[in-house]
Structure formats: structure tokens, C-alpha cells
Length: 403
Image (tube, rainbow, N blue to C red; front, side, top):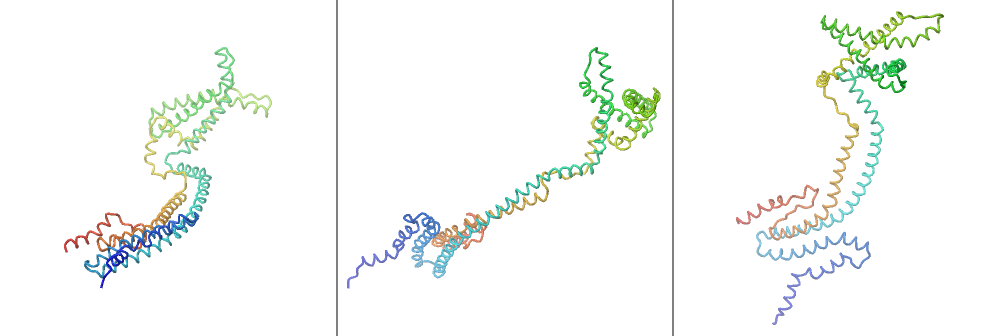
């Protein structure tokens, strides 16, 4: 009996090289070079990676089956090989389903992102519109709760400005005439008002400073200081009454004469009314706000006192341009974007990586007799680092070497 060894050899090679019988047709079909564009795109998207994985699995399965003849625990190895093919099938199905899942997730994320963007822009517009009101509220809370009497300071400065403005208007003609007589040139009243206003502002503010020091001297019961400051206060009274309040009273003479015939006020009554006016204005303004505002202004001018008050002030919340609700909402949206980005990344990467991992498991099973990857991947955390993967294989290699 003659045995055709060439036929047996051809059959044996055909069995060993069986992937060559279909791999070129599979690759050509999956590549779809001769198809229309949209069909070619769909084939390359859905078929190229699975076809490569199946062909690679076939090629690796051939030497894996040949090593069954001399392997230890052959039954477990063959079972693992079939499980590897099962994992590859599940990975291919997960890959196809993962494409649709990624598209649905991407569409939902885009719609949600559009919604977040619209509401974010609307929230920003609201924050900008209400920013002045929050600024005023924050400033009001800071002023009210501050140990420094800012309201008294502002009212004192404002009152000094009012007095300086009134006396500037009243005394401008007199000052202009006096300087014109001295210089021999006719000076414009308009040019005189600005420097006169600044001068009178400091005069009025200085009168409050003298009054504040007088009150402090009385509280300390320092007789020498009381006498000295009282003399200074009397001089201030004389200067303001004669040069400021007298002019103010003189401007009211036509009003008095309007209601009486042959009205003559006289020097005594002019100065008396001016003194009463000075005393009334100073008393009202002093007890209302100047008693608290003037010492603070003096502390600022002298460079002391206010820093100590500010240092003892409890820490306040720093004013921010946006409300805490808006900031918390931004943080929530940022966390949502990060979470949704991780979901999109997982939906995009896990399906193809599972196919690749299943293919690699064929090679690792041939070399080490066990799987490298535990399929299926549930999340991005399932993708272990290279060091962790090598550590998973290390105990098995040590056991094999000891045997």
C-alpha cells in the first residue's frame, strides 16, 4: 500500500495554516475599498478591528493547541483557550454596542452641555445685573459692622464741604475786592472760588479739630490744656464769626429789613447772631456726628489710632464679584463636566480596548498559560498600569520556575 505523503503534508499544512484560506477575503471585505464611501466608513468602523482580532486569535490558537501535547494541566489550558474565544466574542459584541452607546452618550452630553451653557450665560447676566446691589450691600454691612465710625467720618467731611461751599459763595466778593485793592488789579471772582473753597474747607475742618481737642482736654481734666485750647477755640470763634458767619448774617439783613421799616441790625447784634449761628451749627453737628468723626479724621492725619482699630476688627468675608450660590453652581457644573467627560472617554476607549485586550489574552495564554486582562472592562479604573499587570503575572512565573 502506497501512502501519498505529499497529500498528508498538504493536509497537515492546510490545518496549521487554515487562516490563510479566508484572512485575505475577510480583510478585503472589512476594508471595503471598492464600496461607496458611507459603506466603506461603516465597514472600517465596525469590522476592521474585529476581523484583525479574529485572525490574530486563529493564528495564536494554532501553536496553543500544538503545545497541549506537552503542557501541564492540559484540560485547564484548553478550557482557558475556549474562554479566551468567548471573551473575544463578548468583546466584539461590546465593541459594536459601545459604538452606539458612545454616540448616544455624546448626543446626550452635547444637549446637556448646551443647556448648561445657556443657563450659565443667563446666570452670568443675572450676576452682572445684581452686582451693584451686592456691592452696596457688602459696603453697607462693612460700614455698619466696622468699629471705625465711617458714617460719622463721611458726614463730618460732607458737612465741612457744605460749610466751605456756603462760605465760599458768601465771601467770594469780599475776598476778590480785598485782593484787588492789594494788587491793584481787578480779579475774577470765578478764579478765586476754587482756592478759597479749599482754604475754607481746611478752616472748617480745623475748627472741629480744635473743638475735639478741647473736649478731650476736659475729659482728661488737664487744666493747662483746657485753658490753652479754650484760648485757641476763642480765637477760632472770633475768626469764623468775624470773617465767615458775619458775612452770612449780613447776607440775611435784606431779609430782616423786608419785614420791618427802618431796620438797623448794628455791629453788636450782627456779631451776637453770628456767634449764636456758630454755636448752633457747631453744637448740632458735633453731637450728631462730628464728635465721633473728628477723632478718626485726626487719627488718619496723624497716622495713628485707625490702624489699631482696624487690627482689632474681626475678619470679614472678602467681597466677591459673584454670589456664593453662583460659585457653588459653577463648581457643580465643573464636577458634572468632569464626570461626563470621564463617561465619554470610557465610552470611547473601553469598547475597542476590550477587543485588543481579548486578542492580547491569546498571546499571554500561549506564553504563560493564564489571561492578562480580566474582561469585560467596567470602567477606566479596570485598565491597570503596566507595572500592575506584570505583578499579576509574576507569581505564576515564579511558580513555573520553581517547578
